[in-house]
Amino acid sequence: MVHRPRRLRRSAGVRNLVRETHLTAHDFVLPLFVSEKLTARKPITSMPGVFQFALAEVADESQRAFDLGLQAVLLFGIPRQKDEQASGAHAEDGIVQQAVRAIKSKCPELVVMTDVCLCEYMSHGHCGVTRIDGEHFHVLNDESVELLAKTALSHAAAGADFVAPSDMMDGRVRAIRETLDENGFDQVGIMSYAAKFASAFYGPFREAAESPPQFGDRRSYQMDTANAREALREVALDLEEGADIVLVKPALPYLDIVWRVRERFGKPTAVYCVSGEFAMVKAGVEKGCFEERAAVLEIMTSLKRAGADLIITYWAKELAAWTRP
Image 1 (cartoon, rainbow, N blue to C red):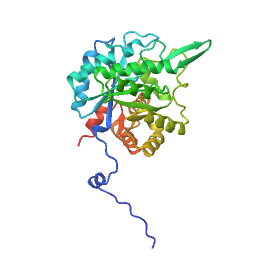
Image 2: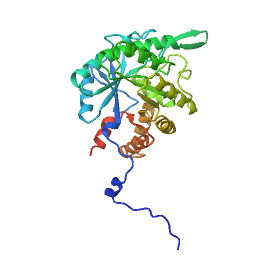
Image 3: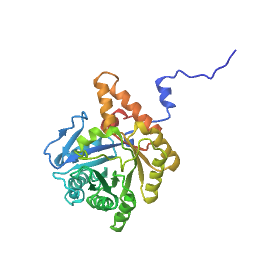
Image 4: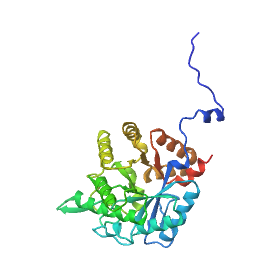
């Protein structure tokens, strides 16, 4: 008689008892878009159920998130005007700076993270200062880093708990850390987009943040989607420069990167389930391909199982309800 290992047909209670990966509201960060141009929320057509918020609304939305059990929000700002110096990014009364102060006034215990990038504020839509030579354009790294550090400092001064540089310029984490420390903000953390790939899944975000590039693309400074070893080098550099949390973006196509980063470095690791991934699931649900809650919970479980300590997701509020004990 052949003896085979037995696989138990478990009851729901037993399955939960031996479940290896559990989701809670504390795993999720809610991205919020706040626009200087609006007086009331505006739906983002490519992202069903996601909105751009007016400044007057963003604190209330953040309070709702906190009341559901979420610990953090990540702010993206949309200025009224753009220029080639990204002036709105580091203005004392910029849209993100105003939003941080409003949220902290209403909900001081909520962790406020701020996206530090220039693309939303640049008239050309790129993540840094550019120079055009004939048919070619260049992003000027050092000039961009100077503006990024200035922007991070303005966010910290407004009350941000974490700044999140998402531009992929070389040396920006060190410059931001030094600038924050020199100005008395040594307790403000840095969540670095350490491995941000030049992905096809960012399209809906560019509508949401109103930041599509007006020429060229971002492949010269975002990572090649084929490169894993380079991602580990980028993460190592950002940790050496002072990053407190390292982030991989997008999520599902890069589970192998999340796993490698968490296993190799053992540092707090975040992943961004991006706009295209969100829109793709929503489209499948609309077509009747699968049930939304089950699909989203399976995706989020896979991200946490791969090693993510934090998951930035547009489903954060729903997940807070779905994972409530």
